[in-house]
Every structure is written in C-alpha cells, then in structure tokens.
Amino acid sequence: MIEKILSLVQDIPIVERPYAYIAEKLGMSEEEVLQTLRKAKEEKIIRQVSPIYDTKALGYQSALVAFRVKPERIEEVAQFINAHPGVSHNYERPGGYFNLWITLAVPPDAPLSLEETVNIFAKNTEDYAILRTKRVFKIGVKLGYDSVEERDEVQEMSLSVRTLEDLDKLIIRHTQDDFPLSERPFLEYAKRLGMDEPTLIEKSQRNEGNGPFKKGRRHFISQKGWLLCQRHVRLEGGARSDVHPWKPAS
Image 1 (cartoon, rainbow, N blue to C red):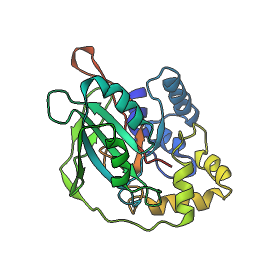
Image 2: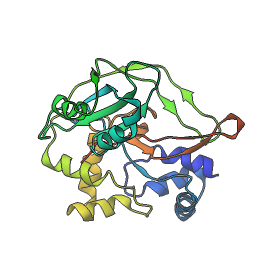
Image 3: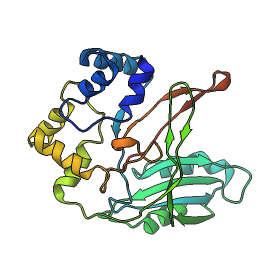
C-alpha cells in the first residue's frame, strides 16, 4: 500500500484536506495515510515533499555553466561555487575540455546578474562557457516505486515570464518548506503567512498551471506542482538512485 500512497503524494491536490482526498481514493482512512507517510520519512524512504516552482515563470535567469578547472583544485572550486544558493547541481566530468558543470539560477531582484555571478566563479578557473536555455521540453517522467520510469509524449514548454505580486512571492518563499503531515497542511502555511486558509488555497489553485506551478509529470515538477524531494528507487540488481529535484533560492 505504501507504493500507492507514494505515487499519489506526487499529485497532492490543493484542497483543505489533501490527505483525506488521497485516502478516499485508496479506500483508507486519513490517519492511515498520514501514519504511513510519517513512517516513510522516519525510515528515510522520502526526505521531503514540497512544491517545485518553474524558475522561468518566476523571472529567474538560469543556465548550464561549464568550467575548466585544474584537477587538483576541483574540490576547492566546487565548494566555493556550491556556497551560492542558486546552484542546484555541480558535478565533475573528467576527460573533456570542461570538467566542472553546474546549473545556476539567479532571481530577478538579485544584486548580481547571472553573468556577473559566473564571472566571480570563473576567477578560480581557467575557462568557462554559459549555456543558456533556448527551448524547454517536458518529457513527463514518472518515478514509480517498482519501475524506474514511465514516459509520456514529449511536449515543448513555454518560456513566458509571469509578473508576481508581493503576496505570490511571500507564498512561494514559505511553501518551499516540507509540506506538513497534518490533516490541514494549508492551514499551517496560512498561519505562518498571517492569512486565512481559503485565500491561500484559492491563490495556490490559481497559480497552478499558470505561472509558478506547472502542470505535467515529474520532469521539473510533478502533476499539480508537487514532487517527492528524495526517493530511493530500487533499480535492477539492487542499485539505488536518489532523486533530487531543485527549487529556486529564496
């Protein structure tokens, strides 16, 4: 049953009692679903459940950046770069001209642009290249508990930017935390934000698929904009793959 619960958690509905909604679909009680998820967290099957926001829609500048770094300085340079909150991935690719690759996102109101930020990183490297996104495609990968992936048709996604209100920014900042395992999780968010629960739910529903939240399966974000922040997926032969999607820096 845990497999079915984990599958549905990747599609959390934006309603007053989302776990009751999931429980009804599975013929379980709300408390059984909550207890199962709490146990899964205790056992490190999942680390976090949270919304994943579309950085392009939020106006972030983002790019894949490649650096040429002296092999003996890889660890030192990687640690320096990783201190920036907008760096989501940083990995070494030995054997090529560029041997350190990162993904970087910079918010629209940041004091430094993406290029200026990379220039600071590059002071510790020999060369670099900024590879900006030209087109985005949603491949629709669903991470299952038994199978590694299921694919839907490939679709090109829009790169349009949405102007956010101050309230949108506040909601995004607070809802990047772990989604509460309680009967009314949006009520907990609402209390932190100093607003009422119906307004938060209505605002979140409006954003879904229309800006920060993007509909679609688990590529950048999952259906309804929710994704397990870490899942241990058993692969053939007993190997384990850890899934770490990214959320923009606050």
